[in-house]
Image 1 (tube, rainbow, N blue to C red):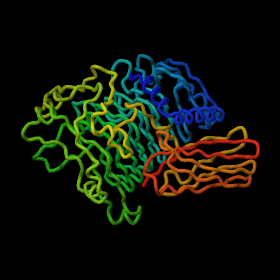
Image 2 (image 1 turned 90 degrees about the horizontal axis):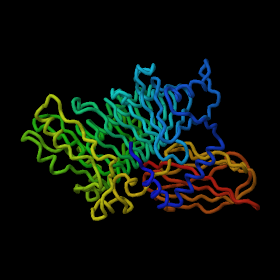
Image 3 (image 1 turned 135 degrees about the vertical axis):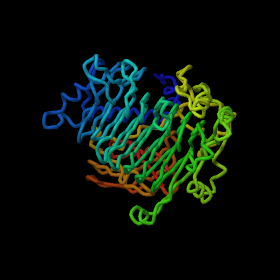
Image 4 (image 1 turned 180 degrees about the horizontal axis):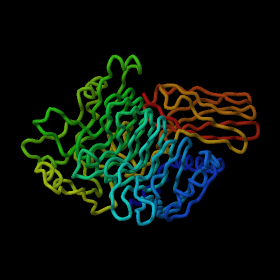
Length: 517
């Protein structure tokens, strides 16, 4: 299990603003929510959730958060399933080792299964979730979403070991927000067409938001879009290492998308068969049909400031019939030409601080059709995907930052939930911004219990102030709002701070918003 305590501490020291944001968020959420601490053990988490749900499906308290203990082992008695309510499970404050969720075996009385099968919104934070049971059996689909219009939010989690896919979507208009997380060791090289991080099975996706994550040792692809519509895709500041087969990010029909500041090393490393008519890509987007344009609007896709490369030891292991995977398909290349961003996309060799070994044996076994191909090596874990400042990628980001997950260089993204801060003791209530995600304008809504001078500041995820709205005098009342126009900002997640000054007090609330251009 990765141990990131030292890295996180560096990240918080790097940005005192981010520390303040997290403190405010956790403090006010704690006042507003019912917190239930669950002891480690067999089926304790299942039982806690079930005991809060009546026979009619109603909840004892719809605003409950289940808190798991640092380093605790939580054996699951079958999948955790919930319907029509928001399930939140988090690690306790100050954790030093992620609580571990693992399927129990028949010997425990529970039977192995996937960890989660949500039919309602799901929030996970600070957890380690594996789909490998106690005896080493490999289950499939760590999180299988089985209802329409469900939102999944993960922050600072690790998902590991699954025979098929980390996320499977069986419903339409699923939203996935994932930040500061790691997904690793998904699939088996004996079945390289399996092993995906996200598989939408042809269902539509509302918003796909991936920022500051690391994906490694994936036998197939990070995103398999099997023909559905992705309305909004934001893929920023992620590290991919050793994604083996098929198109790595297969967006197909995306309406509004951005792919920026990512680092992909050995992406699609099994390569292409020169005699095969189907070309594999690192990033693929299909143009919308006229009917889709009529229904959804004109497609837009931003792609810039990425590094995509394959180690020379990999290409040297290819037989004459194989070639390296192509970086971008024709549609993506057209967007790059239109945006004149070609020079921002690199092909630079990167040496990580401590990465899994280069999978040359897997390449050789694949092309020789070995009966028992080698699996990914995990020797040397925990791994560190940082790299030295001598690399061009170290300053090649859109704001001069490192490419790939900033976590490995001491940076974190603020939490990813759409829900914003709740009521403060003085009844200054921030209700969030709408729409969210937005482009380019959004309304920040709040209640004021007394006349106030209200100002708004907007910060990037690394704590830089990027915009402000001067104070304006506003009367007391509910459903007040100030419009924010972010035309000058780039796509991404931002933190906004709303300050209300009265004659005797200064009140502050903080929210999060997503701009997708």
